[in-house]
Image (cartoon, rainbow over all chains, first blue to last red):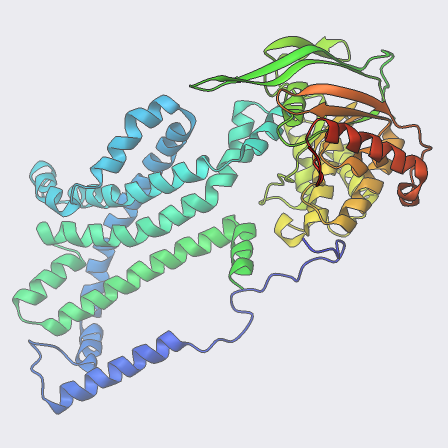
Length: 270
Length: 267
């Protein structure tokens, strides 16, 4: 709040407005080159640790396999994630609006987080078989928590003044929800979805480890038992790339839905 | 432009009290408030923190229920949130996801006003407070003073006969504050609405008001009503006059007597 009241603050600087030195990329390149060099010098066998060039070769050779199995894993992730959002966000609105629901359910949701999901996976397998269902369930369970917690925080973040304002405009409960509470909660919901995206990748792979006939988790498992560490690494890299793309896609959606929030944040960072 | 109600008392506060009950005890926030405000009057309520002046505003807005007494606005008893008023808080409470003009038009959306007419009025209001050209700016792109101007425009969109403001300029720097006071007086003189203005600034109250309600702390009571008999339109230079100083001194002395203000050497 400066005294020069009528001069607007500097326009927000976009994320790509200035060229930045990609330090992280440089670190990564140095690391990979060092890895390759050392592995070549001491002639490291592939079953201990493959060279980066081996991994790249494997990625190229097994591309079709990775794409097919990546598709399976991605399907599990997307179904589980969407279910978590469809259940989590409405539940969060109920928790935020009703003290009874809050006290009846919220502690259980928080408490359930102490249960390791990987330990539940075999149970689900027994119940649902080797198909898509147990994987989707695990992914949904993993994603559910951050979505609910963050959405609750978001829905509760409407200030008392904001609600007073709403009442004094004669807003109905529906209007208060759609015009005030939901948009106010959006940034938190997106934050929860980003966290959930990362966890859902983990969830899918863990579920595949426990029992599956397809998917990148299955590829990693089979490659391991064949001592094909290069294939394992290729699958891991493919998996990470999928996770990153997912995270990026949610970020992109956030930018589309909440342009005000994204530019506010970049202003705060700058 | 506005229908000025024919009642001599547009806003009547009758023997109103308000208690806040916590687990351990009951605190009396307001005690026996009696106040009549004429239509078109600019009344400031001035008092220290904790004198219940914000509570009084909440009562007038119907956002909280009185423990005793009643409040009548335009002859109607206030029992639920009063949507016939314009309300401005210390924080601007702009919605971050709406541009300046969309924030003003929030009122139109909720009240289902005619969009074309409302948009035209919103533009006019923003222009009146010097914000033409900023209609499409988001709140985070505006300075504190500009944001508060937008929130005033929002409060005025539906032409309320009563505007209640709770320390609206309290968070602004001195120069911005001066400008907004002038803007507010100009808008008020054009619309002739009734204004209840809550502040802890004595000079602000004297500069703006027709009448000042001086409140004492805990429990909040009306200590004195002071008519400010200075010509309108008010000019900033009036703050330097003897008359102005006499008013501020009168109020300062009340606060000293009440122990709200203390000087060195006081017993």
